[in-house]
Picture 1 (cartoon, one colour):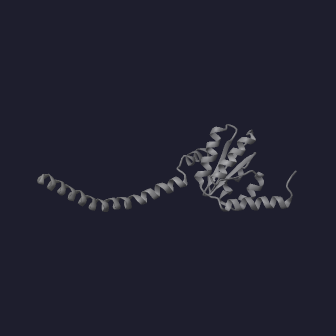
Picture 2: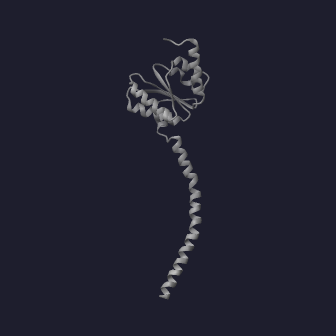
Picture 3: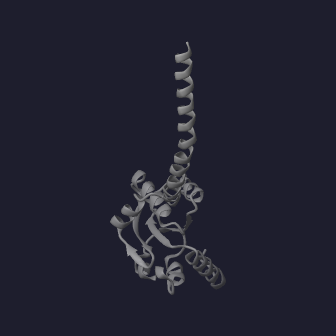
Length: 176
């Protein structure tokens, strides 16, 4: 049964809202996948903060009309699943890794920051470290000078204690 006019407007508004909070979009053809495979993909996406949506291509194209994602609207053809995320690496990793495991899942394209991505661009994006990994590396880099400074400050009294202990040991040897 088709959607009535109000339902179509609701879908367009929902997709517009998702577009507003996303920085990247990757779309793929899911024809021939089992329900279990799609369920596993949805669970993995949900766990990583990626939104997956299956909707009529014409409605998604209308929702994308005045957004940075409009450049790919002409490629919205066939049964597509749309992956949205504020973190472009997360959606690329999840969908690209899923496509490697499932031959029926074919990535058709994507958009990031208003620029269209081809399969090679999505693959390159999927190989980048995730946002959490980058933040951890940044924090470690920022923490290292402070940690080194603390070790240096700690070395002064430690060296003094070792010197006093060596003097004590040498006096004990001389007295014995």
